[in-house]
Image 1 (cartoon, rainbow, N blue to C red):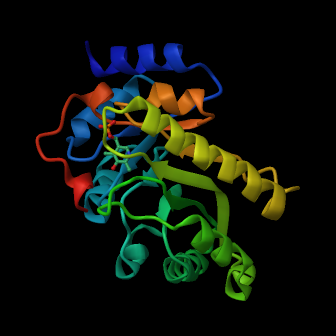
Image 2: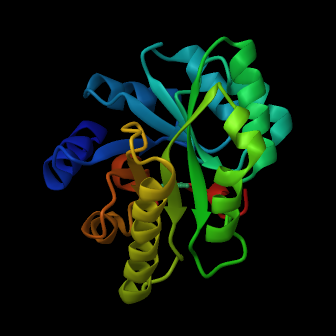
Length: 228
Ligand SMILES: *Cc1c(COP(=O)(O)O)cnc(C)c1O
């Protein structure tokens, strides 16, 4: 099946309540263009340099989401154009995003990445750390970042029960955070969970944004995300 066909069948399968983020990391700009021509506008990348290169080559109405670990010294390269940073995993990083968003005279949408997997290689805030961040005085002063929700990556396992439990926990945490810190804030509405191997389980557990790469673009030779 073509990239266009893959996007079409994913959209039909997941329905209108779930946003499809097409993860184009390691794939050439021509693949992104093909997806774009099929109507896709939201794309995910995990490396800053690759995102900048594609941003420069491709249509400007693409919404670029960063989904990989972001080093504070690289925020400045994407702050002028990035649509959403899904991988916020520290107050220090959020501080830097706020700073460069202010310089670019914009507000950058962010998700807090929550650590739910049973793997040490994955990044993310623990539940306690996320709460600590949201309660901090420093966070209250940030005017140029907007927390839109949470993102999580489940354990890379075939054990569906475990994946389900991890996503269930994240959904429960999301609901609690919304109640406690974003009650009247309608823009806190995004729960990004699920990728090619587990998006069905994630949607069952309440995901409203799935990040799908290989099911759309075919398998990647190098899986950067594992150690990046
Ligand atoms: C690579 C990646 C994805 C997409 O993975 P696929 O298995 O190709 O769908 C989703 N989320 C993150 C954070 C990734 O790094």
